[in-house]
Amino acid sequence: MILEGRVIYPGNVEGEVVKCNSPVVILGDIIPEKGIVEGCGEIRDKIFVFPRGAGSTVGSYTLYALKYYGTAPKAMIVQEAEPIVVAGAIIAEIPTIDSVDIEKIREGDKVIVRDGKVEIL
Amino acid sequence: MYLTKEEEKIMDGERGEQYGKMMRILVKMGEIFNAERLIPVSSAQISGVSYRTIGDAGIHFLKSLRGVKVSVPATLNPIAFDSEHLKDLKVDKEFYEKQMEILNAYTDMGIKPTMTCTPYYFDNVPKFGEHIAWAESSAVIYANSIIGARTNREGSVSALASAIIGKTPEYGMHVDENRKATHLIEVNFEMSPEDYPLLGLHVGKEVNGIPYLRIIGDEDDFKLMGAAMAASGSISMYHVENFTPEFRHALGDNVERIIVERGDLEKYRGEEIEVELVAIGCPHVSSSELRKIAEFLKGKKKKRGVELWIFGARSTIEKNEDAVKIINDFGGKVMRDTCVVVSNAGKIYQRIGTNSGKAALYLRKERFGGAEVIVRDLFTLLRSVVE
Image (tube, rainbow over all chains, first blue to last red; front, top):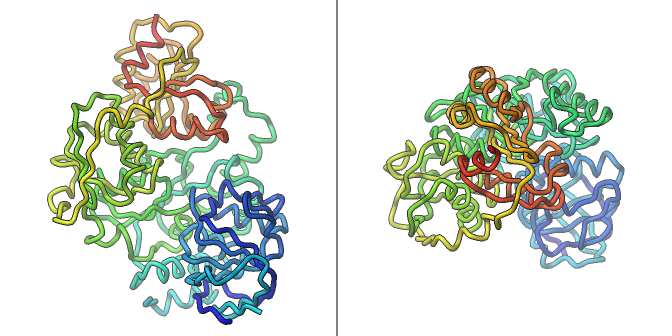
């Protein structure tokens, strides 16, 4: 199955999905030193799927911290991008797409993220 | 989104990868919010300054921008301490040095080290109708509502990108038709001075839009109300009838009515306690607040066992030396560059009195020290520190 989306930061990657079902408070829920999202699990080298970012706009620096500590996900897929995730994805250079119907993606799915599309394998 | 040739070249990296990245942030933001173009801004206010929030990764990012300069006047949010009060604020050497690294990275870009959340008093004063790109939610809501300048609620990184490029995508608060009221707030009781910040906390939680209020008060009252509104929710503008500059055309037919009873505010007030610290200046004090405080304290004696800390901008403090001297002579401490939220104050004191709903909201959180906080009006608080 192929899902259409919109490129926030480009990149072609393949990996396994870790999914959060509620909005992620970027500065608060994510522990960048460990690459963990509280309540969702480890996102390091995974495809991190969540509905949207929330909370303090300083959160963009937390996404950068994932890169800094080597714990970043391979890609992020969001239902609806907002400024924290947009700015964070670009400064951290994490391939990211939005406007994706994430209902169709399940925890543990193997997916390819490419050219603004998600292919579920 | 339409981009000029010049903007496209910057995005493609003609001025270097760092400028390219900053332009891509603005363009992506514009695409998401359906902006038609970028528009020039006349100033920026930068957040993301405290080492406590941005950490080593933040320092690393700011250093990656070495050599980049801002292209419009830009001012800076408070840092984690006043360097003349390091002992009071329990700042150790390592923390001091990390914080200074951040500060230096920003000043190297040409950002003015104003270190205040109230740039609108003296340091960076926008005019009605001016387009600006400000972070710091309390300054955003003040600029939009009380001044009538135009800014979205920018994040640390998008405000920095706008400061560097000198532009912002035209959407949200930059478009006149988006500045109309969405909610009419009916306050069912007579407002007392301590109600403004409490009403702000309540309305911020209830409303995701632009509230219109029929209440009376002055700029200082509404500053406290707006800061609380912006902190408890995501409001970036409000209208006050017969007070704010855009109230006349704000009210249409499609507004939702919200009735506020006095009881709605009760839970934010905090139960009576003996406080160890009275903290004033979140957002930083105005000249009129500083003078009111000095006038009240003049000739009085400070009670033992309770501290009075007042936080303000350097510029405000320098312009009110006489008032500051009276407060210092009384035994209060007037601090600059920092505030009760971003400093260690909440970790040092566990029972705090303040006139700020925003400070109360943060200080009660575990991450900021989890203090017991009461919100009272300025004079009630001042009475509690005099013998």
